[in-house]
Amino acid sequence: MNAAPTRRVRRIATFGLRTRLVLAFLLVAAVSAGTTAALTYREARSAVLVSAQDTAVASFREQVQTLAPSLPVDPETLRELLFVLASKAKPHPWIVFAEYGSLRVSSSTRPTSSVITPELRRTALTTSHGSFQRVVKNGVPYLTIGVPVLTRTSGVGTLPTGLVLFAVMQMSEEQANVDALVTAARDGALPGLAIALVPALIAARSVLRPVRELRRAARSMGSGRLDERIKVSGSDELADLARTFNESAGQLEKSVDELQQAEARARRFASDVSHELRTPLAGMLAVTEVLDEDADGLDPDTARAVRLISAETGKLAVLVEDLMEISRFDARAAELNTDEVDVAETIGKTLLHRRWEDRVNTELPDGIRARLDPRRFDVVVANLVGNALRHGSEPVTVRLRTRTAADGASLLVVEVADSGPGIGPDVLPHIFDRFYKADAARTRSAGSGLGLAITQENVRLHGGTVHAENGPDGGAVFVIEIPLGGPTGYERDNGRNASGTDEATAGVDPSRDDTERAPA
Image (tube, rainbow, N blue to C red; front, top):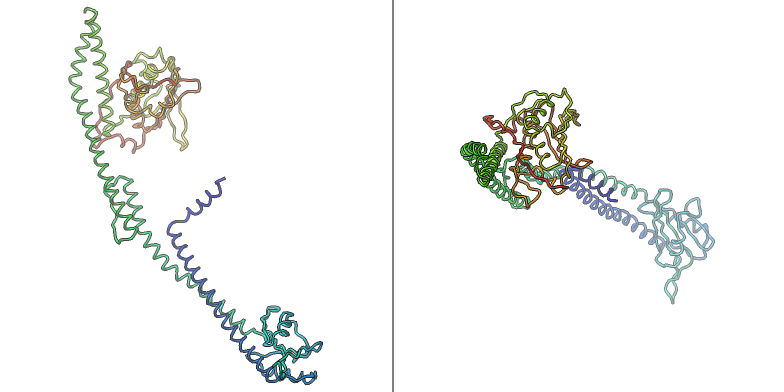
């Protein structure tokens, strides 16, 4: 229903602003030139035709009044009179016709003329001053004049005698002059439009220059140069637009600078706190391990307290390690140490080290090799499988395969599926958000809430993607896609700082919790 308006909008949009301005300027020039030419043509045409017409009408009327034949009419005498009238024609030769009742006489070989119309005959018989009419026949313009012959009376003045004289004059010369005016107007319009193109281009350039500057500055700001400004000149609307842009750019630069400083302070705070906590936590973990070993020899209340302290200390250690890992990603200090590995063997080792081999079904075909960072890929698989075991239902299945992308690149695909209730539609968009809790009431959990966020960052570092969905038979499915040949140069550099420093990724405890999800 709206297809036609949409097509019209697209056709209009294909023309640039410069083209539209020039076309609008030329349209105004064409309308102005056409209007001026039309008015000039009308006035010149009227002047040419009226001049010849008035001269002919006045001359013929004067000659008829001077040489009016007397009644009764004698055809031969009347013919001679018509020759005399024809000889006095001006501005062009006439052919004179006389009509009286059924009598028809002319100064030519034909007694009547087909150019004289019935309207002119009726008007000439009923009007004492006569009348005229312009007629075009076979493309030739004519002026026809009808003047009645009057007779004077003593009482009434003048009365028509019934004799009417007609003059027929060609106006070919006047028509030629009019045609010359049309040709001149047409030939003058095209050079006029060509000349108007020059100021049109100049005007378009003067209008578009600040627009181009605005586009360049906006594009520069979009690429991160928030200090870009536009030179303001003049006091018109475009100058006001430039001033407004500069003011907005200044406010944006100030706001972004404040946000960047706040973000940097937050990252530095998290990193500093994590580093400061690592040392005392290492000592606390050592003490809790000793206490755990001796907990069986303590009284029940003390044993429960010792085990609670040990569990909470472990959670705190995981949170600190995850915060440090996230801070490295935020500071772009993380890097890949890739190697060509057998993917099925690497996934098998991940499950074996965490004693998950009996709880997880695998579909791992042999012979698939990819360039990966083994430690980071281990974290990715462990996070997803551990998340599935904790929040889904067994059995959990890990599938490995390859596929070809639309651009022809070969991709490594790893799927982790569980048999649980799936992921709620309100949770799916936020599943990889940091510290996101599907159930607001479960503010405390066994993990940091950063596991899936770290997983996503590690996959991105490999140049791949990870997404979550619900399987057709229920359960959550996490799908990883990574280029088989490893990340490109840009993707590698995107995860490194200037010094290229990185720290080994900490192993994942099978008891740790990741981003929680609610049943669908």
